[in-house]
Image 1 (cartoon, helix red, strand yellow):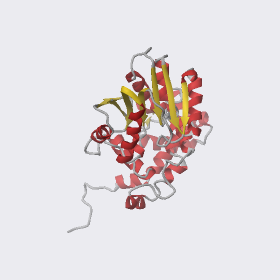
Image 2: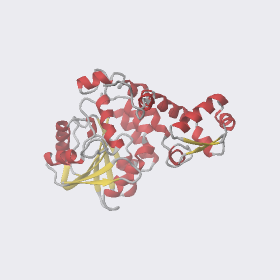
Image 3: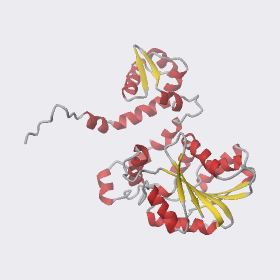
Image 4: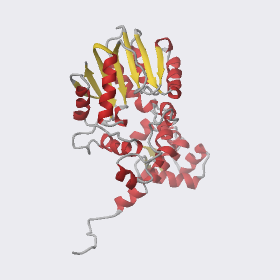
Length: 337
């Protein structure tokens, strides 16, 4: 059998994949230079963009051409323009700007988790010294500060699903991070009291956000691990935003049981997660999230709705329903007591 490649087969995809780190860092460099913002403000040629960025014209031309090749810019003659996604999400003057997420997703610690994927796969989890769940890990302070634009749509979906404004309620926000899920509820409902649980260093960011948004008088914290601290009781709602994917199935069931014990009868849980289909390869972003968890955790995963629903049932809850979140790759799960 011939080993020669057929005319229809090309190694191009392989080379692009092996060089994909260049795409990541090209995008980060463009964000650092505020290149997309300058183009949105009217700079279009390499010379004009270079002047606005205070950068070398050749460097800007090469970077802009590369960003055009990979789909973040357009080019007509010598003029560069923004794609619809770049205009909405990478222009710093856009209300939906998400450029700050690069500080978390591309930090050295995060990328180092994947330097030896073969060994990660052999072990089936993060390597010794890697992973992201160590106590008071400063990476979560970075997360809390950087990810606000990305999570904004899901915070609004959670707030909308939390009940009618004016209804007195006590809300438990687990792995609160930046605190914006609970804060969004407090903003929508002036009768809501929020209790946030996370590491002490991370909760400082949440407290700052609560004060900035005027809900600090109804916002208190419980520092420590959600698995160890006493939540207290009497909650009317619990929030589990982007937390369950860090742990294995059995660990999640134990945590959810603890949450249920802190709730009033008839209370519920609102969960935000990346949820792949049962085939585990669609939709792309949710399905690919499993690989991130393989390198960054000791047992986490992107769970299907079937798996998440079973976790809640095993912990004593009844029905869970799955809902789309507008303008977000995540899903909202609404669980009844």
